[in-house]
Image (cartoon, rainbow, N blue to C red; front, side, top):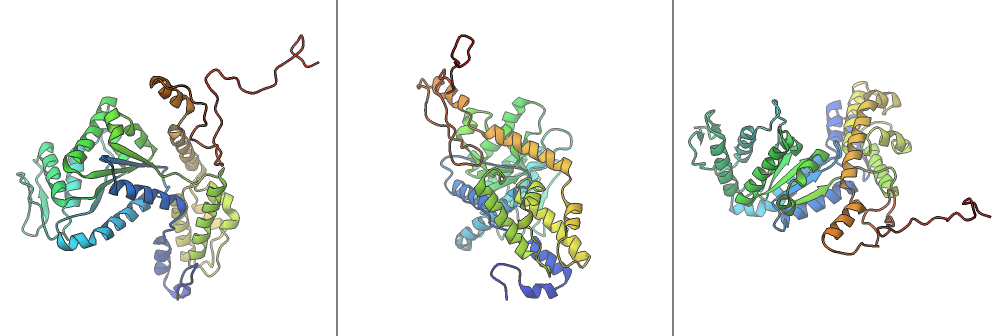
Length: 385
């Protein structure tokens, strides 16, 4: 029988592989994940004329878990439709592969997308109408080496229309910016935008903060896209600390070990070695549990955790990347002041939209030229009498 807040007790009698698989498959629906999931599924179902959705956040924050959960929900929601329309494919995911020679390889991307859309289990195959792209006698998709990129693009357009996707999800989408020039970056996004617009398929681009380089390349792109930030937990926010401790407690109680370790009691340690990212934390615990089970240990000891933690130099690099990404997202008051001036609006005396770190209280702002409150000096030499 499964306990309400932990692993099934009988799991302790199972082989090591079964115990490890149980924890590796454990997903915690924590607040950050649930918020990102709800925002993304709403944007997919109600894109409001947007054809691109950017989802960005730190490495290891849980974007892959988010993608899988979105895929599951879209497939589940489409089941009644698929019974009547078996040729439809509600969602497809593929990875934007990092180029070997500096520039993103669109031919490789189109081929991977076509293969992903031609899932062998689908009963209804596409007729691409392109010489060199066909199904062999076993039903497998064949793409001849000599097919040029323009024909691959047309084949993909036809396939997307035929499959009538709810969303095409591109993971590691920051690799799209691997180009030699800034102008080519705009060409990259115009290619994706036109593909999405011509086929009526919402494209979800998932990646790191490097995606921010692509989100504001043009006014038209900004108008046709939606930005979704999947952030880490912050140690300077009381609510985030509580949520992170809750995640730790859930993992603590689901570790299939004879003796439950005290993860919550060492919150600072686990936060530091995961930089507030649940994905990094989970991978670390997976590695540590595997080592402990292999050595027939009753619990997770500090020695195992220290040995398998991400090295400090790597954590510091991650922290710096996160800081830079978060800083780029701040709606700075000077930017809003410039916008209001450009639009002919009076300077705003209200508060900014960004709260002080760790609070829900907005920072107070002043009008342009308004002095900061302070005591004025008095007396001949500027001293108080």
